[in-house]
Amino acid sequence: QEAAERLNAAGIADAEFEAELLAREAAGVSRARFFAGAAAGRDELERLHELIERRLEREPSAYITGSREFYGREFVVGPGVLVPRPETELLVEIALAELASSPRLVVVDVGTGSGAIAVSVAAAAPGSRVVGIDTSAAALAIAARNAAQHAPGTQLIMGDLLAPIGRAGIVLANLPYIPTWEIEALEPEVSRWEPRVALDGGEDGLVLIRQLIDDCACRVRPRLLALEVGVGQAPALAGELRERGLKPETLRDLAGIERVVCCRWA
Image 1: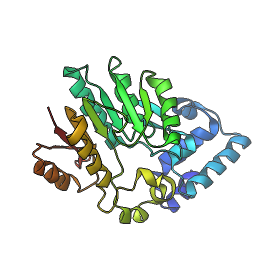
Image 2 (image 1 turned 30 degrees about the vertical axis):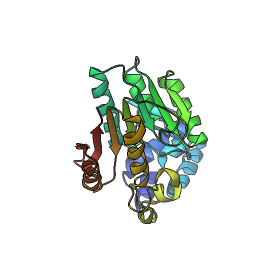
Image 3 (image 1 turned 180 degrees about the vertical axis):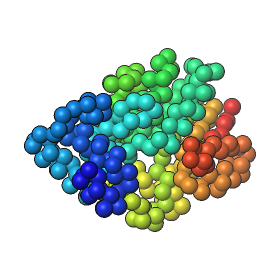
């Protein structure tokens, strides 16, 4: 209770849940065992104090525990990768819906980070070929651990956007989409701790996304391109796609936010 109060006083959201998460990490037990267990010993309390101090420094709880759940599986995460968000699960669902009718399509996850998207698709569609691409060796090392745990067939490649590949049926991308000038105003867990290269989308947040669209239009021409975007960005991006002669579709996340913009070349 004291831990929750300290977190709450520091302005950390969901303080009780966060305190429970850190207490379980300090005790090294599952949620069920945590609630059924005995009172914490001295070592566990000291460990909990250390973890709470880290959280008060606004270090993300996923970095402290080393994992985050995504699409029903636990994924290894760390300072070299973005913490997976629930809204990004929409990209997985879009890919699986397309694979249901066309299972032979190659799926490419651009900017794979922890591998959460690519590995989730590969685990749910084990007969499919799924490729994750990233420019960061540190991110790919984490993605490799997640692939080994959940979907060993996932292919991971170092490269910039779609440069390493010649063809793809489905391209998924949760690229950086936060405008440069907005980053410092974000919550400290994001602005101070998560890798800036995974956040910074340039002046209007869409710089890398436009580069990926160019590559798809000029060279790869996937059947389906699905792009995660930030709040309020979908209308502008959809407008740009229409100017290219494409027919974009916008999908909302569980919060009702226009979160993914899709388009097709075939």
